[in-house]
Length: 270
Image (cartoon, rainbow, N blue to C red; front, side, top):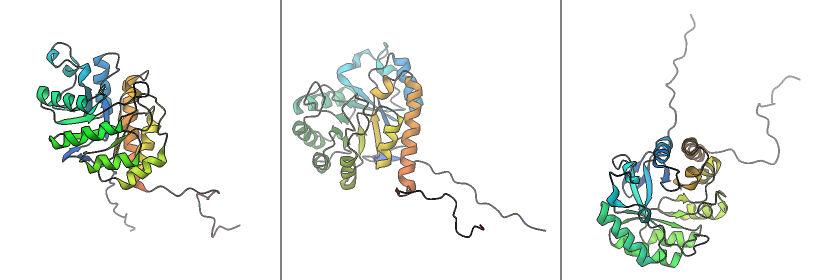
C-alpha cells in the first residue's frame, strides 16, 4: 500500500517587530492624529491601521481638557505610544521648550522633532534641527527627527544620538510619494539607526515602495486623515507596509530586458 508523505506544517512568514530605543513595536506604521473630520473617525482609523505609535502636536492639544472631549480621550495611552511632536517650531529653542513641556505635562520623553525652515514648503531647517537634536539627546529624550532626504544630514543626526532618522519622501501633505528613491537608498545603505520615511505618502503603493526600498517603517497623517474613507485607507496602509517589508526581505527577482518563460522549455517534445 502506498503511503502518504507527511507534510511539514506551513509556516506563514510574519513581519518582524521594530525596535526603537529598546522598545519593540509589532507595527511598522506610525500615524498622526491631525486633520481628521472628527475624533471618532480618527480613533477608527487608528484601530484599522494596527499602529502602536501616534504623533500628537502639542500646540493643537490642550492637556487640561482631558475628559472633556479632548483628542487624548480617544487615544488610549495604554495601547498607543504617544509621540509628541514639535510641529510649528521654527528654532531649536522653540523645539526644545516644546519637548520639555511635553515631558513636564505628560511624562513623555519621546519626541518627534520638527524644526521648520519655511512656512510654505514646510521644509526643515537642518541647522536648527541638528542643534535641537544634540540638546534633547543630552537631556535624555528619545529623539525621532524629521528631515529632508539628505544623506549627510541623516548621518549627522544619527551621530548625534537620534534614535531614528526620518527623511521625507516628498513635502509634507503633498501626497506625491517617494520622489527621490536614489537618496533614500544611500541613506539606508549608511544607516546606523532605523530609517522611517516621514511625509509625502499619498496612497498604499507609496508606503509599499518605501518599505521595499528597505525603510524600517513609514509615518503618515494626511494620506489617511484626508482620504475620502480614512478607515479604509488606514487598513490599506497597514497591508501595504506589511507587504512592502515582506517583499523587501523575500529577495525579488532581477529585472530583465527580455522575456523569461515561466515554464522551462528544455526537454519538451516537439
